[in-house]
Image (tube, rainbow, N blue to C red; front, top):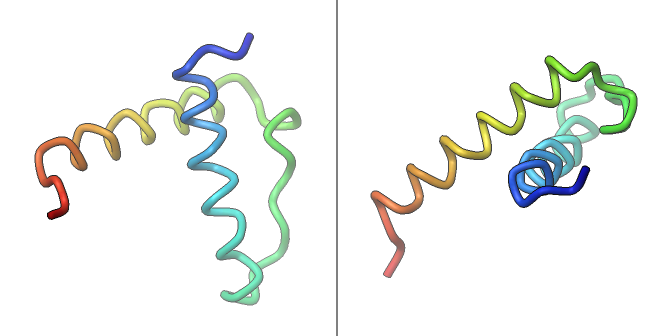
Length: 59
């Protein structure tokens, strides 16, 4: 299922993964290896990020 909500959650998750190497942290599992609960948490995080961006648009 690739809903817009799912895609936004995955995009946020994968963008945060890129920071792990720079922080000397171990790699995280691929999106498809996450539990449904973990994927839902990332979907909610993406919704919060979008709402925050909508409230504070950049010039």
